[in-house]
Image (cartoon, rainbow over all chains, first blue to last red; front, side):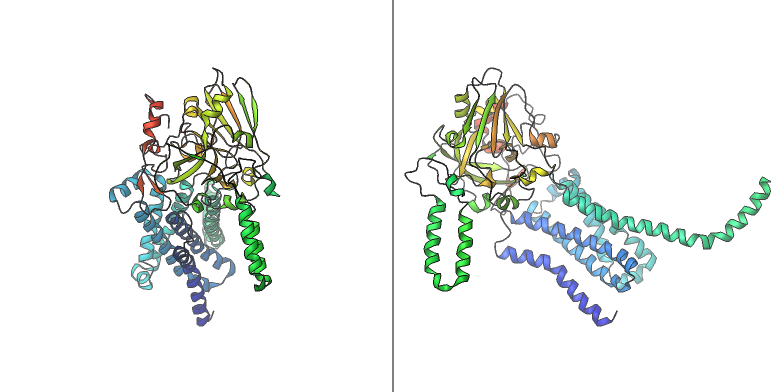
Length: 220
Length: 317
């Protein structure tokens, strides 16, 4: 894909990713956040963190299926926006819910499983955001960088668990997100299994013929 | 069509809101006729909105009212938990628009001298309606101050003369999937039921509620009749009641059945007993930025604490 198309698309993705927070800001200034505005901001930023995390995780499978390699050039952008919403979500909790009372926050993380899960999800995103630059990839080396960035799987799982555990009764939304996440992770597992199965015969065939010969002798 | 269902209550001072609103929009509609068809369209939208407006109620003041600032009507009638409609906060206000509250019967039975079925308009006249401004604390950690209209449930109980077998009172919400779309999902075990111990039901604070802000209850707030038990979490205050039964043992209640480890039968507001998943120590009063400390029995301890003397409130949460 041509460079200028990539740039144009990046602008579109930027606008799309910024729109939820702009919409929130617009509603906040027009008294449209309803009766419990702080809860609305917390919920909305939390939802968008999860949506963007799942979109980030969908990019690689989508590239594999469609062979549109340029898709990968949007992964970091969307991933960083997931982190951005995650930071805002964390901020609403630290500020509006706990008013930066460190003692209360520590107690909460320790005592409340859904807070523990949410904090874990955020903490796992943090090193990924820090090492998102091209120079970090060079410094760490592609292999190590890739291993580190597998933390996103754990972060997404912790994030969905966080949502699941905090819902009062109606689990529909966490169930939908968990199903999508399971699909995205399942795709990777199956893709791996298929890849090893396809590559194995070519590599293993000479070995197995070698091995069957002596074993045939000894058994006979 | 709904206008003819407006309850027949002492009417000297009432002009139903729907009528005067209609009158106003008729006048303004006439005045703006010249502005063209588009304006007329707007007026028609306004008319369809006011058809559902409620009726003014005559009330007397109550010594049980708090002097704290009341939560705006707009918030009380838009931020609702009413799972019979749906599980969102803002959904019920819209989904409840066409809910039919007339005709409406309330069946009172169980261990009583004589069972009786009340027409809602007769039930409302059982005792003088009072305005009771109560704090309302939701189990989710937010609270409101609501000027309810009703009378102590004890008025009805005394009238019914429960027998010595009556130890608890069980309340049941209407079951009607055509009007309550939420009842098609399995989110709770429908119909919604709630219960109180006899002494709790007889307590003067326990309010059989027909209105708020001086008017009949908006549908999304539990019309035409609901319970309000201000020292307990909001879900104990069951909405749209169709039957009241005096029973011998603790009745099954909707949220307790759904999650017994999270919602107890008593569900008294208590900052010292956390929900298993979140703290109950603080709450956000709707309209306020800072959180406030939650009070034991929602601040009604002086009146109700003695009913629970000697009870382990952590065990009987």
